[in-house]
Length: 320
Length: 320
Image 1 (cartoon, rainbow over the protein chains, first blue to last red):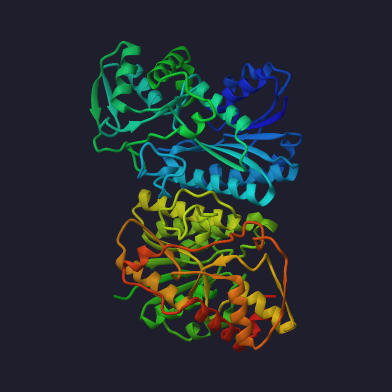
Image 2: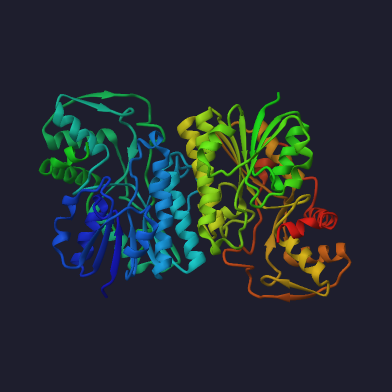
């Protein structure tokens, strides 16, 4: 059955891919974005589609939101300040864009009688996890970054609205996502450096940080499957592949895809930045039990991402 | 060694007792309160003390805060919207008073180079706990009330500031607190009803909700001991007695203390209100390991509270 979705952050990496998928499935979509980091070109296809409506607006505009949400059945709330690394430069941004914006989304839903919400949280909410691979019911963690803290606050608000106002929610704790329309993260940084100077690469930390990743289309498969199959009041799912790589592995694949052999300059230490978690690997048993599994490996995801950047170098400039 | 403390919520139940204790120990105290629920009479003693400075101000006043915090060494952040039961009537209040206010406190600390903060969180952050008695490292919970979600958001912000800016924190997850200057909660509600009509008592839920409590002076002992002895970056402690009672037990002690025998009218169901947790009992092994234990039982705490209300009936009117 076709629905009317609101997608916040619709011109972002994940948002624009979600919009395209929903339109392909025959749904109506209202996309909202303030274009602070989103790219209008990612909506080139959607904007030609009669079932797509774009709102250029900000989630801090409470009254606007209430109007824009009118008539929708379901919200996929992806808009966020995803600038994890520089959180300490502007702590207010995470509070506003991730926590207060989520509150405003929930209030706009309440004003319009919309009860279903999917939310992009992060595996970073586990902090420096005591259990790895980390399941959703891991020991109550201590937050280690402003970004994760602001996302956890969003999770808490959403769960409380489910209990208080009869909402239903699907909360996804992502590893880093890779693939088409990827616009920030280590592959982006390394690609950019190597384009400017293929002979050397500056690597934050010691290159031994272990991280997990997921390909964008696998991520969207999981989101839509969970929303279809998981019927609890609050449904929390880790999303990631069943494994991890070292930053050094990733550097190897990127270099190979670009045909370069840079000298590696490590900044040192086991963390890339304050709050960087040196080992992220999520237990995805719960989402796999619904029949999902990722189609692409981390290596495939990295290579796809490099190919996307090669074919879309405008992204590098747009995000400067 | 004597310090200069900032105490937010200084005219509240817990805040005013903390202020008195700190002054007695020889510290300087700057108390901040907007008197939205606090009582000026609770500061009668403190206001006569040369080491006490009262600021009548709001934690949403960011610029004010930065000025008021000047010269302090340490913050005890107790100000909050503690109106748990009616959270669904005004969701914005929890967001503003508990989450955004905490962010403002942290920013005012940063602006003044203050690095130590104690925070009153709540045992409600465990939601409907999977493990009882519930330890600090219980499985990652799902939030069930706007109040708890807003407190958890505060915890996350504080922990992230510790990691990001070299702060040190003591986060206390309280059960309900009882004793002198108690101004809201079930003893208050029952006392007030029985004063108006000693023959009947309306009880939310079925009276079988199991809850734990702690006497205010035991609570303050624990806070100050933990701040003295616990040296991690982020120190999280449950505070409560080692046991629980049924609401019905409490009704018995209150009735006895008042010499009344009311007919009990239960509203029914196993919860008093939306988001009410029918069983709260915290594992306090961690704080006990520092040498703390409560001096008063729950029964003693309830009786002390009734005695306080008897001797201070003005509180009933002030909070109407």
